[in-house]
Length: 292
Image (cartoon, rainbow, N blue to C red; front, side, top):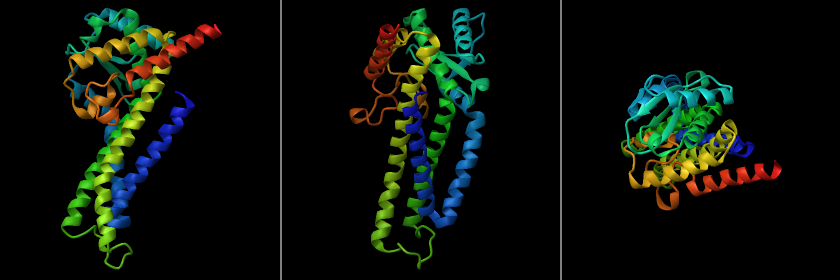
């Protein structure tokens, strides 16, 4: 992963954590902040251990044996050797829309899933580039980061909802003599509790986009050639626009290209623009050519 993207991820995770604690404090002062922290801890432990099963179940993925998909297994075997990491479990999603994702808390508990559609439109080199990208997510621990981010962002939304109801039916649970109990402060707090889930979503999306760039670069290094992944991304983007994939919104950020439509100007997109990703990969190939 690149240093710049790593720093950006740490900063955004810190911002997300700070936002989470702020909402907890608004719900019930110091006690609310402690409650929010404990709740997040419990949710993170659960998602840490079961995130792969949850993600695969949500996508309707089924495990596939070497006998039923020998070429797919051969590609993953080769890439695992190139990346010097354990071979992930392999799953297939019955969908004509071409896409893929990886999940798992670490390389020893990882899985990659591809749709039946992706194996029909990509060449072997392109499919190898896509799978190298997904294995890069595992190698970079992106799948674990995505789980933590999704859990904290979800907790912020839940606690903000609780706080809004608490305000409507009796306040935050703070004492009357605490500073900031005026009408203006309560109105500001109420507004913040509406904006907090939106801010959490934007931070989540920013982290997701940063990790995609890192996985593109790492995947290109694993496979040894950025161009097949660039070509695959163009095909996948076009195909997903023609035939959108039916997938739960919560799982959209896992896939290599966005299976859902983004918001205004891509603000609410879980992925960076495909054209920008392709340009970076081609610049990487050009740089290698020049230095080679």
